[in-house]
Length: 316
Ligand SMILES: [Ca+2]
Ligand SMILES: [Ca+2]
Ligand SMILES: [Ca+2]
Ligand SMILES: [Ca+2]
Image (cartoon, rainbow, N blue to C red; front, side, top):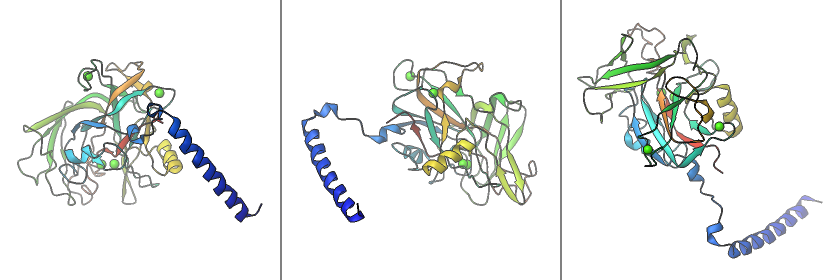
């Protein structure tokens, strides 16, 4: 069959099919129409955006309440930064996410994945059920999804950090933690605004969570922050690279089967209603730490998880 003939045959076939499709559609009652609203696979609501101080916070591009609201209904509609350790976002879908075999949830971030210049900023993911069915993340327990570092010796559970509002916008943001450390979220030359969230009441804010070890390094002048092997957001893991290569846009995958309670024991969940992501490292991206005066000490800015949306991997 020559090409012109086959094209003509295909056109005729498509024409006949389109007539059949239209006539079938007419006969079908409206309430039997299949669900094709792909938007429902994505975030339907941001319940809370509470970032820790960081270089993108209060910035109109990545760090305001209105930027967080833009994540609803799609992927890469915007990007929010969660700031330093503990800063978080809580979101949900217009339906519960079921725990089926394998991965259930995908979360979009912006890790740099070039070999030798990795810039991952791992975020821990927690899930909650709406036990009292009031549509709010207000009564269940937050269950951490245990990633590859869950049992690592350098992982610190129940880490608590307190950030202090600076007197002026030009100051580094001081913090203390429950291990007796004192430090600063360092300001840098690229972002001059106040790094402490402008909408927070009071003069200090506290975050709690699991602290993961730093993965920062420098090689030939290039500062990198390596990914963990699995189970974190904004993390350029091998699986992220695979999805990026197959779909053209990478995301991190999560299995509700990974849920653990506050004692570290596995919990069985048939579904979840709410998801929380928080920055899980406490790092200024400063390979010369604790030297704050080195010329490269402030070149990267704090390690802060970014999120560009999420997807229910079972939604068809
Ligand atoms: Ca699953
Ligand atoms: Ca509830
Ligand atoms: Ca970041
Ligand atoms: Ca990032």
